[in-house]
Length: 557
Figure: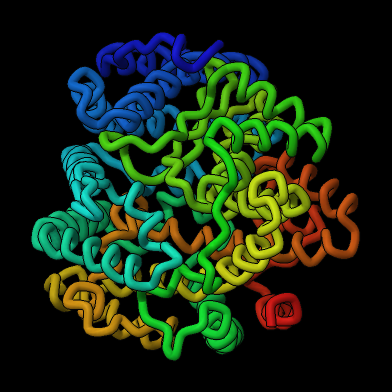
């Protein structure tokens, strides 16, 4: 079914409550594991419908944040989502405490039951009002970002549409564009500080009501950190500081030569070539057509997948002034359909949508017939492997998007991917510090970011910009507001995806077969076990990051 034709129905919380009251009663009365799993199938069917409607409502609000009907629906969804989570958790407790748990673990997976344990400790009637307030605060931040109207070169642009000027080949143009962005954030920074201060205090209060010292442990539970915790992440960041920060610092000297400047400034940070970064050649329609041809040639599985996406109009990728910033993939379980939201803006990021977001969507597509819903309750450090690896597997088709500058794109993509590793760790460490010390002032938080820049990005010069040089850059990183502790998943996934890059350069077919295997594994097992099964090394293992940094240095320097 075409996405535009999928009917939307408001989810009424009373109906959800009644369903779970009955389901819990039936599940508790089950006389065998087989009977209890048959009852659990009713949960799959019902929640497929609920999740589909929730996601459609949010998606249709995101494509036009000014449309009144879906604006109201988005507010309603913000309000009921914590309540639904509570009902789901109450039901999952029945499965967790079942006398037939061993049978259910065999059917559903041990991972799912570990996740239930984490969620049992993460929600309570005590905090539902706080969770609703948290959602409202996030939506308020989103509205500030989506409603940006930045005057530039005689146009009025949102942040997504400004990006092509932030990476303009003319250094003066991009300097002025960054100044315009800085001025916009300066104009709203007090409100963003207020929102974030309330978010930190809200999340800290949730944690303390649940018996945690601060939000860090609760945040890990909500991210379903079922195979590693803070200690392992800290060790990972330590390895990045030791191996990747010096490597990336060397890489910046090479990039400085590539763009022909005496010293790198912050408005040069996303630039890789003097003549400008490679941009896609052709219209959005031609980009989509090139994607269709690429996936037809990559594998039979990707050919079938992309045909399905096009046929059912599961892309909304054109940038519009009233559209939410950013991009993502989500999944509509009722229709077994991934869908992709993005903002094409004429830069190479348009192609990243056809690779990165399609990596997410492809994994959802190849597992769409798996009856066990919990198998696709992906933790993000796994989910992002699928997307980031797809960026590398599609390298051989970049001439379809960039013409004779395909080689430049590949060089840029590799350098950019490597440079991201320290930045992603910086975002993560920032959040740990903030939630460890929730009583910090907004000025304190900006000072923390300013100091972390010296550790993770020592090459970066903000040239005295009154907003960015004073530690304000983090306010444009939405993940800090949306999903605390999510961002490190991009980093973990990126270093695993780089292992696939090294692998495919030696044996593309073998690397692809293992990638496909990883996609189909979903979350049937724990993170490091799945990496082992797919022939990959854990990023937490001492030595993995140093070895990878050496391998990537050979490819980029």
